[in-house]
Length: 436
Image 1 (cartoon, rainbow, N blue to C red):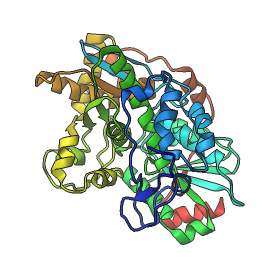
Image 2 (image 1 turned 180 degrees about the horizontal axis):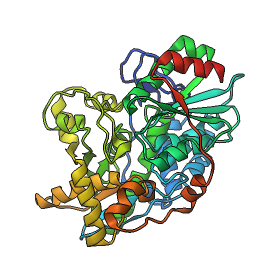
Image 3 (image 1 turned 135 degrees about the vertical axis):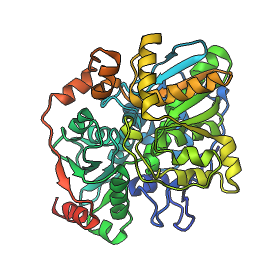
């Protein structure tokens, strides 16, 4: 692809196309849609022949989206800030099975990569007279990653919305431990309620003139695109070592991480089949089994970060495959894992393989085990999205041992933590934003 400016378009096709800097600053498009690149570059493995580090793979992969944009000159520095930690891709369990560990960042979750990239982008853009307030809804991990990425950055504030009682105690502590320019609010409702509150204020153009707002959920193109990088890096390493594509099972809730994997494959990276692992919130599994897509009320599960009944990024999937659902179902598949199987899989991973995994990673492993039982061949990777130490109430009784804390997580848990209460009401949220 040439260095011509690649525009970002809304999935709903009404808002005008914009450059990527504007799309990152905006979050959702003015017509309520989500920004997507108007076109995608096509790579071969040879294009990355000189790129071995995650930083260099990320820069080469993302450059076409930023070429000609105000952020182009800063892109390599942005990648260095976001991708300093390279996630291990290592054998797991039986032959031809692997695990991609995405939880070695600041908050022990995969969200650290996208949040760090977005924060570096916004820091490189000119700042207005009023501070930009990032409004982020979280089912457990996003809020902490965004808080860590933006904490202490001038000209930016972060307001975190999370469902009261529906995140793990350690996740809740992380969300409220930052202070300064980061505030956490406990909402009496589900993650979908928090997400709707965020969408309501972000979609209110008049209010955004009064209080400048931005988004750091996976609805932001600045969160979505960088997540392609670790899939590209893992697939290229595997390809160089084996000459074979890497098939992937992604535990998913709001679908951003899975869409990023799909986009990396669309760009020509050696990624094979993509399977989504859902918990009991199975709207996606039902769709990929042939039913009409229908959002469902959220169910609380052990894999709480995936407790999403109306995944935002499904709109991006529909935009990518607009002609017929059969085309989308041919590109992606899905399966569901209930709490009983999450527990069983955590136990079996520990007893059979000596591995300790979180409930979300257990969903991916359970789905892979079903694939193998059905005779599915090839090299398969499960995506480990969070460190098991974030969920001691679930994991430790099952394995009969304490899960050691990673250093960064221990430091966060040692800090005091506070979250305010917030009614499940858009006007109440608007008032908080005005008063801040």
